Length: 162
Image 1 (cartoon, rainbow, N blue to C red):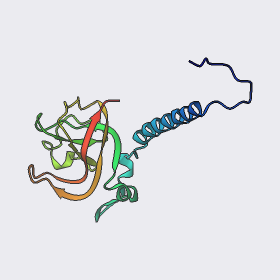
Image 2: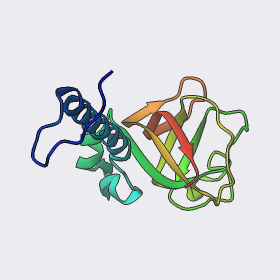
Image 3: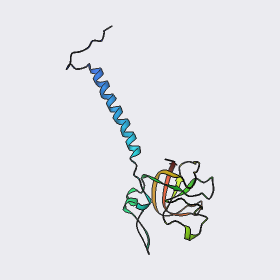
Image 4: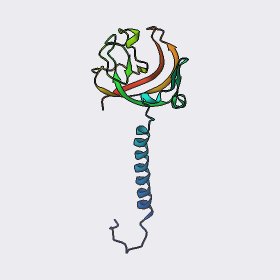
């Protein structure tokens, strides 16, 4: 059995230790990149959804067009749900006291995003800020199950409180 001895300064370590040291560095780098990738999702805010509001309607922003089909993050409020067992909800930029489906057209917010969850989650109070992550879609679409028409959606989504 060989005993370990200290080497004089400047002498190279055995190949095994050199390779092990490099592999450890690569693993640390990979783990830090994984954490960065998760945190690096583009963030979209309500003030960046539309390029203009006019007599011809809403024009989507270049950012929405660029991010369509990609996972994005949004931080806003969950509107009260029509049914507690739904697998979708409406994201609004300000807390709402009433379900947007139950209010009049005059109370309907111009900028809402429909969030379709990848799996059921317990909903939160309407005055609680939430972080939502999902795949962005834009353009008019009618949900075949509910008949609800949306202009912006997050699909395969999940949410959490910050």
